[in-house]
Image (cartoon, rainbow, N blue to C red):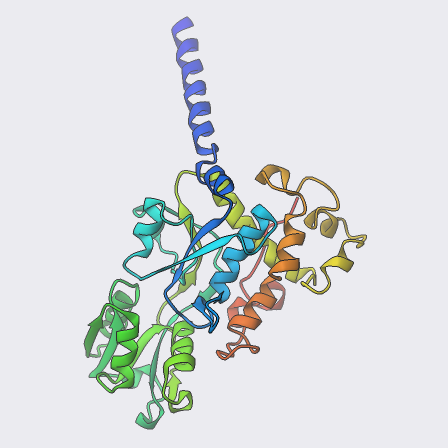
Length: 341
Protein backbone atom coordinates (compact mmCIF):
# COMPACT_ATOMS: atom_id res chain seq x y z
CA UNK A 1 0.00 0.00 0.00
CA UNK A 2 2.85 2.37 0.86
CA UNK A 3 4.52 1.76 -2.52
CA UNK A 4 1.21 2.38 -4.28
CA UNK A 5 0.74 5.62 -2.31
CA UNK A 6 4.25 6.81 -3.18
CA UNK A 7 3.73 5.93 -6.86
CA UNK A 8 0.45 7.83 -6.91
CA UNK A 9 2.07 10.83 -5.23
CA UNK A 10 4.88 10.89 -7.80
CA UNK A 11 2.31 10.69 -10.58
CA UNK A 12 0.43 13.68 -9.19
CA UNK A 13 3.68 15.61 -8.72
CA UNK A 14 4.82 14.82 -12.26
CA UNK A 15 1.53 15.95 -13.74
CA UNK A 16 1.62 19.11 -11.66
CA UNK A 17 5.15 19.86 -12.85
CA UNK A 18 4.16 19.20 -16.46
CA UNK A 19 1.17 21.49 -16.02
CA UNK A 20 3.43 24.14 -14.57
CA UNK A 21 5.72 23.97 -17.58
CA UNK A 22 2.78 24.21 -19.99
CA UNK A 23 1.43 27.24 -18.12
CA UNK A 24 4.83 28.86 -17.55
CA UNK A 25 4.22 31.43 -20.28
CA UNK A 26 7.61 31.30 -22.01
CA UNK A 27 6.43 33.15 -25.12
CA UNK A 28 4.05 35.34 -23.14
CA UNK A 29 6.82 36.43 -20.77
CA UNK A 30 9.34 36.92 -23.58
CA UNK A 31 6.95 39.12 -25.58
CA UNK A 32 6.05 41.15 -22.51
CA UNK A 33 9.73 41.67 -21.64
CA UNK A 34 10.58 42.63 -25.23
CA UNK A 35 7.80 45.21 -25.33
CA UNK A 36 6.26 44.31 -28.69
CA UNK A 37 4.78 41.40 -30.63
CA UNK A 38 6.68 39.91 -33.56
CA UNK A 39 3.97 39.05 -36.06
CA UNK A 40 4.49 37.01 -39.23
CA UNK A 41 2.41 38.27 -42.15
CA UNK A 42 2.08 37.82 -45.89
CA UNK A 43 4.68 39.59 -48.01
CA UNK A 44 1.80 41.45 -49.63
CA UNK A 45 -1.84 40.45 -50.02
CA UNK A 46 -4.32 43.29 -50.37
CA UNK A 47 -7.03 43.18 -47.74
CA UNK A 48 -5.12 40.82 -45.46
CA UNK A 49 -1.56 42.08 -45.01
CA UNK A 50 0.28 44.59 -47.14
CA UNK A 51 2.13 47.88 -46.63
CA UNK A 52 0.45 51.05 -47.89
CA UNK A 53 2.18 53.89 -49.73
CA UNK A 54 3.61 55.15 -46.42
CA UNK A 55 4.94 51.73 -45.44
CA UNK A 56 2.24 51.16 -42.82
CA UNK A 57 0.92 47.61 -42.73
CA UNK A 58 -2.82 47.18 -43.22
CA UNK A 59 -5.24 44.28 -43.58
CA UNK A 60 -7.43 41.86 -41.68
CA UNK A 61 -4.52 39.68 -40.57
CA UNK A 62 -2.54 42.77 -39.59
CA UNK A 63 -5.42 44.03 -37.44
CA UNK A 64 -5.51 40.73 -35.56
CA UNK A 65 -1.83 41.25 -34.68
CA UNK A 66 -2.56 44.80 -33.57
CA UNK A 67 -5.45 43.56 -31.45
CA UNK A 68 -3.14 41.08 -29.65
CA UNK A 69 -0.59 43.84 -29.04
CA UNK A 70 -3.34 46.09 -27.70
CA UNK A 71 -4.60 43.42 -25.32
CA UNK A 72 -1.11 42.85 -23.89
CA UNK A 73 0.34 46.36 -23.94
CA UNK A 74 -2.66 48.67 -24.29
CA UNK A 75 -1.10 49.97 -27.52
CA UNK A 76 -1.90 48.77 -31.04
CA UNK A 77 1.46 50.02 -32.30
CA UNK A 78 3.49 47.65 -30.11
CA UNK A 79 3.95 45.17 -32.96
CA UNK A 80 6.63 44.46 -35.56
CA UNK A 81 5.46 42.95 -38.84
CA UNK A 82 7.73 40.37 -40.45
CA UNK A 83 6.72 39.48 -44.03
CA UNK A 84 7.05 35.75 -44.75
CA UNK A 85 6.69 33.70 -47.91
CA UNK A 86 4.60 30.53 -48.02
CA UNK A 87 7.75 28.45 -47.61
CA UNK A 88 9.11 30.52 -44.70
CA UNK A 89 6.03 30.93 -42.54
CA UNK A 90 6.00 27.72 -40.47
CA UNK A 91 9.77 27.61 -39.93
CA UNK A 92 9.72 31.21 -38.75
CA UNK A 93 7.07 30.41 -36.16
CA UNK A 94 8.64 27.13 -35.04
CA UNK A 95 12.08 28.72 -34.65
CA UNK A 96 10.81 31.67 -32.62
CA UNK A 97 11.50 34.29 -35.27
CA UNK A 98 7.87 35.33 -34.86
CA UNK A 99 5.54 34.99 -31.87
CA UNK A 100 2.36 34.85 -33.90
CA UNK A 101 1.58 33.86 -37.48
CA UNK A 102 -1.34 35.84 -38.88
CA UNK A 103 -0.92 35.16 -42.56
CA UNK A 104 -3.97 33.80 -44.46
CA UNK A 105 -3.01 30.27 -43.36
CA UNK A 106 -5.42 27.34 -43.53
CA UNK A 107 -5.98 25.37 -40.33
CA UNK A 108 -5.46 21.67 -41.11
CA UNK A 109 -4.93 18.52 -39.07
CA UNK A 110 -1.29 17.99 -40.05
CA UNK A 111 -0.36 21.63 -39.50
CA UNK A 112 -2.02 21.49 -36.09
CA UNK A 113 -0.19 18.29 -35.09
CA UNK A 114 2.91 17.44 -37.11
CA UNK A 115 3.99 21.09 -37.41
CA UNK A 116 3.54 21.68 -33.68
CA UNK A 117 1.13 24.59 -34.02
CA UNK A 118 -1.94 25.78 -32.16
CA UNK A 119 -4.54 27.56 -34.27
CA UNK A 120 -6.68 30.29 -32.77
CA UNK A 121 -10.29 30.63 -33.99
CA UNK A 122 -10.67 31.19 -37.71
CA UNK A 123 -10.71 34.87 -38.62
CA UNK A 124 -11.87 34.21 -42.19
CA UNK A 125 -13.70 31.16 -43.50
CA UNK A 126 -12.72 30.68 -47.12
CA UNK A 127 -12.67 28.12 -49.89
CA UNK A 128 -10.56 27.45 -52.97
CA UNK A 129 -11.88 28.73 -56.27
CA UNK A 130 -10.90 29.63 -59.81
CA UNK A 131 -10.42 32.91 -61.67
CA UNK A 132 -10.57 33.19 -65.45
CA UNK A 133 -10.61 35.93 -68.05
CA UNK A 134 -14.15 37.13 -68.68
CA UNK A 135 -13.62 36.92 -72.44
CA UNK A 136 -13.18 33.14 -72.14
CA UNK A 137 -16.92 32.89 -71.51
CA UNK A 138 -16.49 30.20 -68.83
CA UNK A 139 -19.32 30.12 -66.27
CA UNK A 140 -18.45 27.06 -64.18
CA UNK A 141 -15.42 25.12 -62.97
CA UNK A 142 -16.96 22.08 -64.62
CA UNK A 143 -16.04 23.67 -67.97
CA UNK A 144 -12.29 23.63 -67.19
CA UNK A 145 -11.49 20.18 -68.58
CA UNK A 146 -8.06 20.34 -70.27
CA UNK A 147 -7.26 23.83 -68.99
CA UNK A 148 -3.81 25.00 -67.91
CA UNK A 149 -3.97 26.17 -64.31
CA UNK A 150 -1.49 28.35 -62.41
CA UNK A 151 -1.00 27.27 -58.79
CA UNK A 152 1.44 28.25 -56.05
CA UNK A 153 3.54 25.46 -54.63
CA UNK A 154 3.72 24.78 -50.88
CA UNK A 155 0.03 25.44 -50.31
CA UNK A 156 -3.11 23.36 -49.74
CA UNK A 157 -4.31 24.34 -53.22
CA UNK A 158 -2.20 21.79 -55.10
CA UNK A 159 -3.83 18.72 -53.51
CA UNK A 160 -7.30 20.30 -53.60
CA UNK A 161 -6.89 21.00 -57.31
CA UNK A 162 -5.81 17.44 -58.09
CA UNK A 163 -8.60 15.93 -55.99
CA UNK A 164 -11.28 18.09 -57.61
CA UNK A 165 -10.31 17.28 -61.19
CA UNK A 166 -9.88 13.58 -60.43
CA UNK A 167 -13.28 13.35 -58.74
CA UNK A 168 -14.94 15.01 -61.74
CA UNK A 169 -13.01 12.90 -64.27
CA UNK A 170 -11.39 15.96 -65.83
CA UNK A 171 -7.80 16.65 -66.82
CA UNK A 172 -5.68 19.76 -66.45
CA UNK A 173 -2.16 20.99 -67.00
CA UNK A 174 -0.61 22.31 -63.80
CA UNK A 175 1.70 25.33 -63.98
CA UNK A 176 3.37 25.24 -60.54
CA UNK A 177 5.30 28.33 -59.42
CA UNK A 178 6.80 29.14 -56.01
CA UNK A 179 6.48 32.93 -55.67
CA UNK A 180 2.96 34.35 -55.60
CA UNK A 181 3.94 37.41 -57.62
CA UNK A 182 5.25 35.15 -60.37
CA UNK A 183 2.09 33.03 -60.26
CA UNK A 184 0.00 36.15 -60.78
CA UNK A 185 2.22 37.42 -63.58
CA UNK A 186 2.01 34.06 -65.35
CA UNK A 187 -1.79 34.17 -65.26
CA UNK A 188 -2.24 37.78 -66.36
CA UNK A 189 0.34 37.36 -69.13
CA UNK A 190 -1.60 34.41 -70.55
CA UNK A 191 0.79 31.62 -69.62
CA UNK A 192 -2.15 29.71 -68.11
CA UNK A 193 -5.92 29.77 -68.60
CA UNK A 194 -6.91 29.69 -64.95
CA UNK A 195 -5.62 30.92 -61.60
CA UNK A 196 -6.59 28.91 -58.52
CA UNK A 197 -6.31 29.91 -54.86
CA UNK A 198 -8.54 30.80 -51.92
CA UNK A 199 -11.33 33.02 -53.22
CA UNK A 200 -10.33 35.84 -50.87
CA UNK A 201 -6.83 35.76 -52.35
CA UNK A 202 -8.25 35.69 -55.87
CA UNK A 203 -10.33 38.77 -55.05
CA UNK A 204 -7.25 40.48 -53.64
CA UNK A 205 -5.15 39.59 -56.69
CA UNK A 206 -7.87 40.80 -59.06
CA UNK A 207 -8.23 44.12 -57.21
CA UNK A 208 -4.50 44.80 -56.80
CA UNK A 209 -2.73 43.12 -59.73
CA UNK A 210 -5.09 42.75 -62.68
CA UNK A 211 -4.49 45.18 -65.57
CA UNK A 212 -8.27 45.74 -65.53
CA UNK A 213 -10.13 43.98 -62.69
CA UNK A 214 -13.42 44.00 -64.60
CA UNK A 215 -11.85 41.73 -67.23
CA UNK A 216 -11.69 38.78 -64.81
CA UNK A 217 -14.30 36.71 -63.02
CA UNK A 218 -14.18 34.29 -60.10
CA UNK A 219 -16.19 31.16 -60.83
CA UNK A 220 -18.97 30.23 -58.36
CA UNK A 221 -17.68 26.83 -57.23
CA UNK A 222 -15.76 26.40 -53.97
CA UNK A 223 -13.79 23.16 -54.03
CA UNK A 224 -12.47 23.08 -50.46
CA UNK A 225 -12.84 24.34 -46.90
CA UNK A 226 -10.16 26.86 -45.99
CA UNK A 227 -10.52 28.21 -42.45
CA UNK A 228 -7.84 30.89 -42.22
CA UNK A 229 -6.61 31.31 -38.67
CA UNK A 230 -3.74 32.80 -36.63
CA UNK A 231 -1.27 30.27 -35.25
CA UNK A 232 1.18 30.02 -32.36
CA UNK A 233 3.69 27.38 -31.29
CA UNK A 234 2.85 24.45 -29.05
CA UNK A 235 4.13 24.82 -25.51
CA UNK A 236 2.74 28.06 -24.13
CA UNK A 237 -0.89 27.85 -23.12
CA UNK A 238 -0.92 31.38 -21.68
CA UNK A 239 0.11 32.92 -25.02
CA UNK A 240 -2.33 30.71 -26.92
CA UNK A 241 -5.16 31.66 -24.57
CA UNK A 242 -4.43 35.34 -25.10
CA UNK A 243 -4.45 35.13 -28.90
CA UNK A 244 -7.57 32.94 -28.91
CA UNK A 245 -9.59 35.19 -26.61
CA UNK A 246 -8.55 38.34 -28.46
CA UNK A 247 -10.25 36.93 -31.56
CA UNK A 248 -13.30 35.98 -29.50
CA UNK A 249 -13.42 39.48 -28.00
CA UNK A 250 -13.78 41.11 -31.41
CA UNK A 251 -16.70 38.77 -32.16
CA UNK A 252 -18.40 39.24 -28.79
CA UNK A 253 -18.14 43.02 -29.11
CA UNK A 254 -19.78 42.94 -32.54
CA UNK A 255 -22.57 40.71 -31.26
CA UNK A 256 -23.18 43.16 -28.40
CA UNK A 257 -23.22 46.11 -30.82
CA UNK A 258 -20.05 47.60 -29.34
CA UNK A 259 -17.89 49.43 -31.88
CA UNK A 260 -14.83 51.66 -31.68
CA UNK A 261 -17.21 54.64 -31.75
CA UNK A 262 -19.66 53.37 -29.10
CA UNK A 263 -17.32 51.57 -26.68
CA UNK A 264 -17.00 54.58 -24.37
CA UNK A 265 -20.76 54.86 -24.00
CA UNK A 266 -20.96 51.09 -23.42
CA UNK A 267 -18.93 51.49 -20.22
CA UNK A 268 -22.12 52.67 -18.52
CA UNK A 269 -24.26 49.82 -19.86
CA UNK A 270 -26.35 48.03 -17.21
CA UNK A 271 -25.81 44.73 -19.03
CA UNK A 272 -23.65 42.52 -16.74
CA UNK A 273 -22.09 40.76 -19.75
CA UNK A 274 -20.99 44.09 -21.24
CA UNK A 275 -19.67 45.19 -17.84
CA UNK A 276 -17.56 42.02 -17.58
CA UNK A 277 -16.43 42.26 -21.20
CA UNK A 278 -15.19 45.83 -20.88
CA UNK A 279 -13.64 45.41 -17.45
CA UNK A 280 -16.15 47.54 -15.56
CA UNK A 281 -16.58 44.48 -13.38
CA UNK A 282 -13.06 43.17 -12.62
CA UNK A 283 -11.80 39.72 -13.51
CA UNK A 284 -11.88 39.32 -17.31
CA UNK A 285 -8.14 40.00 -17.56
CA UNK A 286 -6.91 38.28 -14.42
CA UNK A 287 -6.83 34.71 -15.75
CA UNK A 288 -5.04 35.90 -18.90
CA UNK A 289 -2.43 37.82 -16.93
CA UNK A 290 -3.38 41.19 -18.42
CA UNK A 291 -5.33 44.33 -17.50
CA UNK A 292 -9.10 44.04 -17.05
CA UNK A 293 -9.58 46.85 -19.59
CA UNK A 294 -7.99 44.84 -22.40
CA UNK A 295 -11.19 44.30 -24.39
CA UNK A 296 -12.06 47.99 -24.10
CA UNK A 297 -8.61 48.86 -25.44
CA UNK A 298 -8.85 46.39 -28.33
CA UNK A 299 -12.24 47.66 -29.48
CA UNK A 300 -11.32 51.32 -28.99
CA UNK A 301 -8.06 51.09 -30.93
CA UNK A 302 -8.70 48.32 -33.48
CA UNK A 303 -12.46 47.75 -33.59
CA UNK A 304 -14.80 44.79 -33.45
CA UNK A 305 -14.72 41.99 -36.00
CA UNK A 306 -17.33 43.61 -38.23
CA UNK A 307 -15.32 46.83 -38.40
CA UNK A 308 -12.11 44.91 -39.12
CA UNK A 309 -13.82 42.89 -41.86
CA UNK A 310 -15.58 45.77 -43.60
CA UNK A 311 -12.64 48.16 -43.84
CA UNK A 312 -10.18 45.51 -45.05
CA UNK A 313 -12.07 43.04 -47.24
CA UNK A 314 -15.76 44.02 -47.06
CA UNK A 315 -17.93 46.57 -48.80
CA UNK A 316 -15.78 49.48 -47.61
CA UNK A 317 -12.68 47.95 -49.25
CA UNK A 318 -11.54 47.41 -52.86
CA UNK A 319 -12.23 43.67 -52.44
CA UNK A 320 -15.94 44.28 -51.62
CA UNK A 321 -16.48 40.75 -50.29
CA UNK A 322 -19.80 39.72 -48.75
CA UNK A 323 -19.76 38.57 -45.13
CA UNK A 324 -21.28 35.21 -46.14
CA UNK A 325 -20.27 32.51 -43.66
CA UNK A 326 -18.08 35.10 -41.94
CA UNK A 327 -21.21 36.75 -40.54
CA UNK A 328 -22.08 36.32 -36.88
CA UNK A 329 -23.97 33.18 -35.91
CA UNK A 330 -26.98 35.37 -35.14
CA UNK A 331 -26.99 36.42 -38.81
CA UNK A 332 -26.60 32.99 -40.37
CA UNK A 333 -22.79 32.84 -40.32
CA UNK A 334 -20.18 30.79 -38.47
CA UNK A 335 -18.67 33.49 -36.26
CA UNK A 336 -19.31 32.71 -32.60
CA UNK A 337 -17.69 33.46 -29.26
CA UNK A 338 -17.88 31.40 -26.07
CA UNK A 339 -19.19 33.29 -23.01
CA UNK A 340 -17.00 35.89 -21.30
CA UNK A 341 -17.45 34.66 -17.75
